[in-house]
Image (cartoon, rainbow, N blue to C red):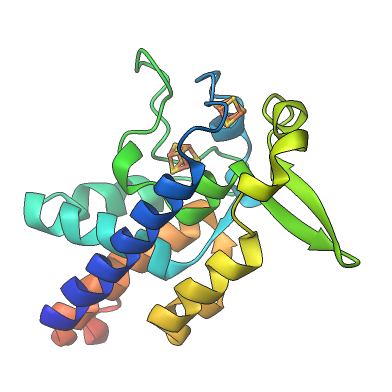
Length: 181
Ligand code: SF4
Ligand code: SF4
């Protein structure tokens, strides 16, 4: 457990670092359009979900989420999306993965040229603020340096969440590996 907790703390520190870089940027309007995208179009890694997996473990609700994840297919949206919420829509906004954070203001290098990476609402507002944006690859490199194995492979967001829950369970209770967990 200690190793997983240490990894999760490092990931949360990276999220905090990103929040500091992004503070002061035009903020997300909470329209929820990005969270409503079919989950297969949003990719994340296991490591990005490790802090949430540990939080859910402590709350005793990993099994509930694994059961929900058993019932979905790739055309479904992210299981963490809650359309009943008043603003935004993420059930665990403070634990949301890196991909969701970068989509509200970052840039990628395309043929050496910086290009804003954000939703269609924020992109026009961020064009003149490139020097204030985090670079996606640099942030991903920091994630890889925390744990290469858990950050290497990207999966559709629901699969990444499921794998993080399973990884957490199997790491703590290795006997589950033999029961198909
Ligand atoms: S990031 Fe963009 S699409 Fe997503 S909720 Fe915010 S404004 Fe809407
Ligand atoms: S994790 Fe949260 S912010 Fe990201 S797509 Fe799912 S509901 Fe939206």
